[in-house]
Image 1 (spheres, rainbow, N blue to C red):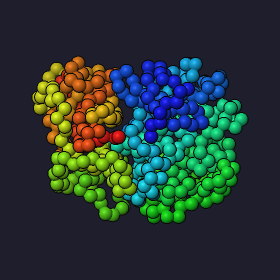
Image 2: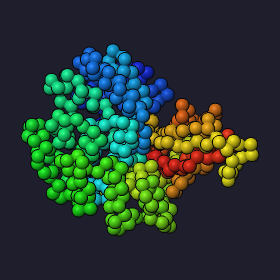
Image 3: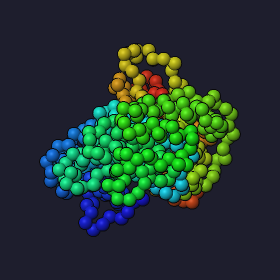
Image 4: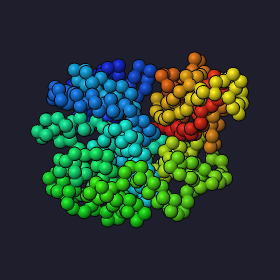
Length: 466
């Protein structure tokens, strides 16, 4: 939920206009900001007392540099920062969606299938974070956001900057006792396996609706974290063994994030019944999926219901697990509203291989991530891509799964209504947001190079978020 700005709040940080408050924590305040080209971002501003501490500034700079290396579909990527400003700040991609804490509080615990899908997304997120040499240090339900195209872990690697300062040791509360690992609670050195314990605690909360080590005074909670058992009563049997492995008191007995992902995939495969028609045919990068099955064509128009319900969350997360969170949402997929501008020339059929004269050593571009956000009636899809051959020249998309968007291809030099930035492209589709006749759409999108060779396509689901 976005709160209004207070009189003492800044209105501009770096190049970003601040629009409202998103929250606050031990390290600073978080605001919803907007870039000059209309891209929403989450801007974290460091508390003044921390900004005045040289040790904190040094650690903050190191953590921001490490966080910039983190890439993946399941994290809110760092897009900008100024660690040398009078008040240091950090901007990450804005994620439109409730936190896991809000979703469980509103709708109750998740089903077994939803829990496994959530576990897969979080394990993939931690794998990307740890591969960049970063330890999250504060993984908790409020730091897991449920976006339309999958969960996002936020604040990775930044909270440790505050933990390392004398101010933190002098009494500044950093982290959440119920979700700390035993070694973290005891003030010992923490590593990636500390995050795995926190992941287990997050899953326990999502499974039961309760904090796994109870409530009360922080000292009492931390004592239970170090020595007491977790409350896993009511946790689904299909998920409980995975949670228990994560919550081992001895870090050496916990699985690494990648090992946990393998266990989640095995548990998903063992679950019955298989995913329904809305999920069949989506391929999970973590493993094989059920063979595609015929699916009925959906109605072209249906009202999008913005309220989050327990079945909606279950379907959202189950679809996420089946599709590896790159292909998500089994919501109705609709035809666009009339404001869509059908521009861009048709491209010739995709060549089977490199065009004549194409250097075999020049690899084609490939897509590294996707993101969606809403502005007025439009929902923008954003594609991030890598271009190792330096030969990407445009992008294209076409409606799938019942969406009637015709195939289009646009040059980066002439992107129609698109917004071209360094190694990313944003494009708006009219979903009728705010009109009372909201639609959802599904498109297959790609990047293509000068020879007409397309990248591996991605599936993107678009829906109004407010």
